[in-house]
Length: 259
Length: 259
DNA sequence: CGCGTTTTTGAAGCCCCTCAAGTGTAGTGG
DNA sequence: CCACTACACTTGAGGGGCTTCAAAAACGCG
Image (cartoon, rainbow over all chains, first blue to last red; front, top):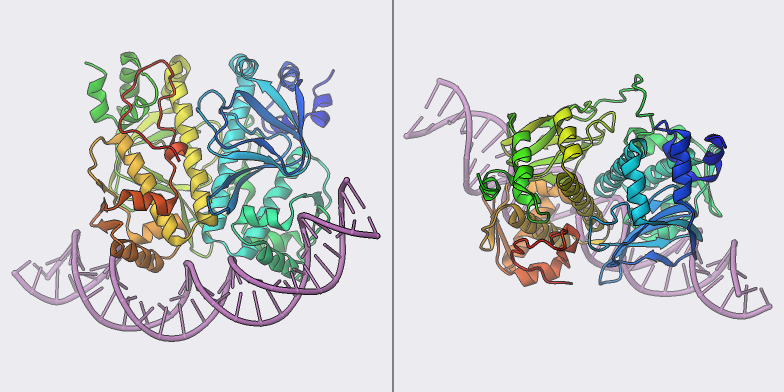
């Protein structure tokens, strides 16, 4: 079996092998980790707030989200989990989940034994390093969401999230000719963006009218990528999609001035 | 030298030893890491956006912040860094900083060589585990900020941030009789909370009028903690201040009430 | 086919922003 | 020691982005 064979089947391997050189043995080990595959129905929880984590959950197909609900019923989605994303890499370090994981679509995930997982990371430095990278990217995404909610308008937030999802989809799924699968409903988008569904709708309509974006039936069509990028002020650097093994020259991007 | 001797002097040791049992050797190693101490003047950058990290920066005294500036000049603070917090634990994994670190007050920080740092974590599992814990807490804080900006009102955001800072200060500094040092100006608070300084001022005034909180000259006086906690809907679980070594007895400090 | 959910649109209102101006307050240099 | 400066704090008035409430149309699923 050649390493490439895994990339089509296992989204984690596809994601990691883009930034770190994994040996064939690494790939086999990662694949072996994903033997116990389970399912979650759309709109059902995978992990609940307060659970004591004992296994690692890795999304294999479908979309899920981290979220937190306040007493007044308001819900904030704090992360979108795509195939190849872990729900709880911190198993064993923290006592309890301080948020929940819910399936957005029907979802399949690998249910990884903690001991097996720790053996894997202990034995394979490349994998440890790759998982380190993945958590740092997750953190970068989290920060960019905070920036969106803090200082961006509704229009900019929608544009930025679409740019982000487009990039993330491209990193696990080669295709995408201006079009990609995006199963979030407008209420979902609202809960991720700190807006109401009504307002998300108005913004999405306007973006369509402006010929920038079309969202229909779980598909996003980016009609004008430069315009979308401009609206969002999107700089994909925070996703760190460059290989971290080779020290290539990197586009410095637009500099921010020192304070 | 007894381990306790470090706790007063080194905020990192003080922080970590509350949740993980560190041996005397661990403490000595951590202390040895902090030999090269540097300074940053208030309102100056410690690390700039786009820098290639090569050393680890650990705040020893003073307050700093992570932040990101957009082209329109709007600034979002994405994290507040207190003594014992690392600026860039990810040295060596990521290529470039995707945000900046700025000093809020005059700040001293340890400037740790990367090789020395990696040797430390490679040789001392307890420390590795403790640093893992610290990054997960940072992530939890980040998520709670996202929830604040997403679904909380200005009044609730201010209350929640004050509750958070009060807990974090208590974790590195024993004292606090309803009063603690908090050098953030109202413009700082605004940039952290996704509000304007004007509105922060109105909210702070109202909280004072309601007898909940007083902010004056870099000091916060919590006048009515139950009321503040209620307004914020604050649940300190996400700070994971409990000991994560199940069988070690660690000074529990003042107990946290469950939500 | 019927029902729940999503999408869409309108109208009214409020939370927070913007603009503006005046009052502290600390640091600087003459 | 006191101008002078810079910035934080404070307060008022007006405006706008987003919310809330409401309801109809469209979609998808059992």
